[in-house]
Image 1: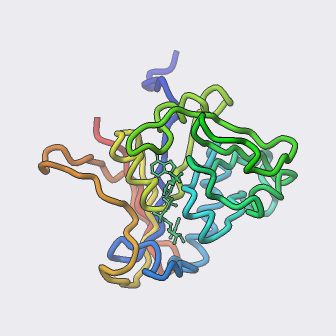
Image 2: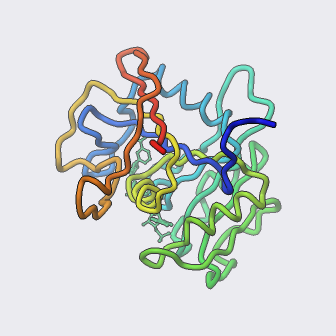
Image 3: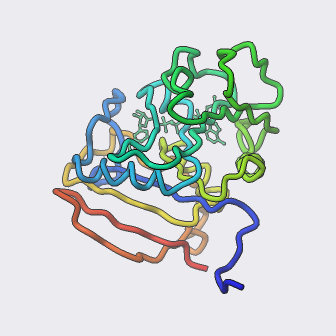
Length: 226
Ligand SMILES: NC(=O)c1ccc[n+]([C@@H]2O[C@H](COP(=O)([O-])OP(=O)(O)OC[C@H]3O[C@@H](n4cnc5c(N)ncnc54)[C@H](OP(=O)(O)O)[C@@H]3O)[C@@H](O)[C@H]2O)c1
């Protein structure tokens, strides 16, 4: 039997690709590209090494990402691509919904949502969830649905609001942080929204497990302190 601690839920990795000052996009939403080619290539390996990846609805609205692991040769299996879209704001024209042949997709939404909003694409999964903090979908319930779908590792790819919600819920087990030598300033969008911490003692704390140079960028890995 393994000595590794067994989690009762899927493990959660937070991937951040930021400026030196922890920003992920300009105030006007421009975000392509902050990190260099080598760091972005590494993200595709990370995707392939997770069972699922998730982004918030605003990221899909702003960037219309594919979220596939684009590797050569291609991975044996694509991660399940999940969008957290409590209120059905992601347009039906999003690339995620027209690329199911590339890999599976799930929409995590409130159980009160009408499914007519989304395309009736065969194979599109829906996770109908109760509300949690702030009226958006409950993240612990999302992880339960992920587990039922066979997901044991999930990578959160942003943006800042969804990342902060995972962090506030105490659900981020590790961080993969790609940091580019560029400064975007306080008016740019932060990689993490507010955590509403009352004191430093309650701040989530991580241990650095590695730091590597990757092209012009730094790649730091962290694990949650027990
Ligand atoms: N540099 C990078 O690597 C990178 C990566 C990702 C994104 N970005 C940039 O980040 C920007 C978008 O980030 P963002 O922070 O504005 O938005 P976001 O985190 O992508 O999406 C936020 C939305 O997610 C939905 N959501 C569903 N469940 C949630 C929950 N439990 N908690 C919180 N939100 C939940 C909420 O809308 P509903 O309640 O309506 O569902 C919320 O408004 C874009 O400009 C994008 O380009 C950059």
